[in-house]
Image 1 (cartoon, helix red, strand yellow):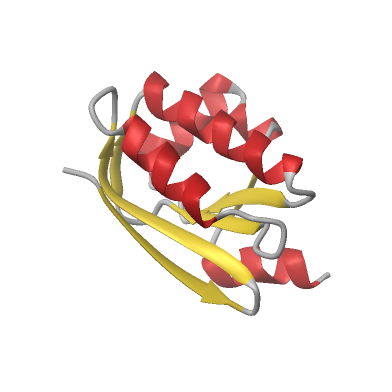
Image 2: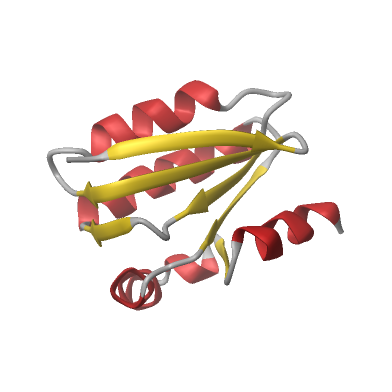
Length: 113
């Protein structure tokens, strides 16, 4: 089961999915994420620290979210990737599409600079 927590820190939206993003949950992840994105809230951090699994459907949702953010003039980045998620992100090349940071604080600092 997928749960998506979110918090706004210094005008930066932090999304924290937990569980699995797969064919059954990717659309919900995409819709919930895009629901929060707008012109005034267009800097997004996706914190994967509680995510157990990311499928190709989840990668597709990430791509759609990244495009949605960029269409609003913003940027989306990822942080706190567990090893198995990090491997999927690197093998798929998504680390060249969305920045990857070690922690939420590192990701927030990216937006501050």
